[in-house]
Image 1 (tube, rainbow, N blue to C red):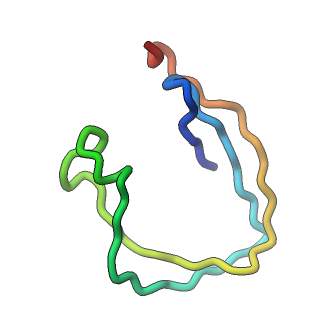
Image 2 (cartoon, rainbow, N blue to C red; image 1 turned 90 degrees about the horizontal axis):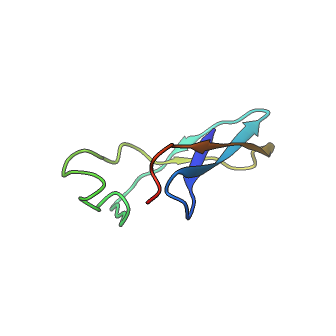
Length: 76
């Protein structure tokens, strides 16, 4: 399950990934950059760190909508 930000600060769209079976393989990573996680207003220095990269291929799956997640008092 995961939630994505929307244009409204108090609502997140929900989505669930269902896999009948799955396997992952590790990937070697030479460099990592993320403008999202490098934003010190959201993440103070050292609060987010890369840990691994995994590859999934040919996974039989289905996407399912979830109810929105709402946070009272966040808009405005």
